[in-house]
Length: 338
Image 1: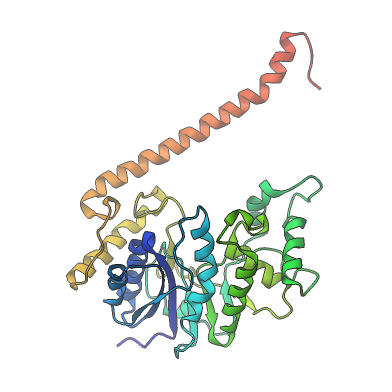
Image 2 (image 1 turned 180 degrees about the horizontal axis):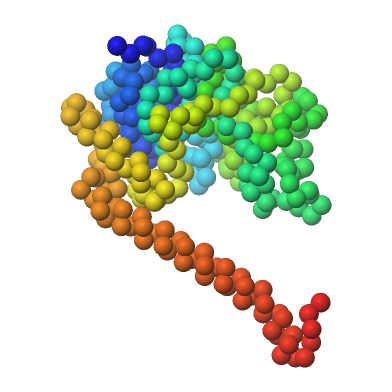
């Protein structure tokens, strides 16, 4: 007999994410049937909600911010609601609350990694190299070639308005995190801060310093707040045989499988088959989630990788030709390049 989980899993879903969140719920329930799961629904229909609430211990909550058709708004809305999703577990007894991205699946029982030993915020911190790749397009003349650009740090410090110097050197991811109940008030602080600096009603008014909305808002607070929660490395990927597999962000696996994610295809089909065997209602599945299409899905995935490889080679050759063009032109007119 399995022990009752010590965690509540929270997930955000709108109508475009019903299928992947359904598969995530299936995966969690497959390995731990007693897992308590909260879905924060953004304008979900009654039919959408029913796909989730048919499972024991799965509850759907309506978000405080409705769906928006304004370009770019849904990304910001979903991010602002991360704090609200965590707070749906406020009245529960479980000591740990997790926030999982909707495009993930569990490959085993995640109980030990959803309930660590030390009360803290468990999240993945980026390396300096990862941050450098993110910020390379946002550096201005005079910025160091490595590290977070000064204008980002300046804006974050001004918005937080507490400490003058950053307590961290790198950013922190805002998805697939685990928070101890003793620190749950931080979820409200995080949401309040996001509501202050993110403008979902007019995304163009959100400062570029928050172009990764929830992530940079979280990083800003952890860097410049006087009393942020302690941060520890998330454990959800520490066991290769039982981990949280992130199949996103793009392309969406329920529409198109990349070669790197194909190893999870059979597992996803296994979850769906199990749901059918148990008599659960299943949303209308796209072609990419039908077992009979596996040969075509695999073939397209390989063809896509070949296409990507060819594109990279053509791009490399093009850069080489363009890069050498001035030298050849100089030789044509009897000049030498400096």
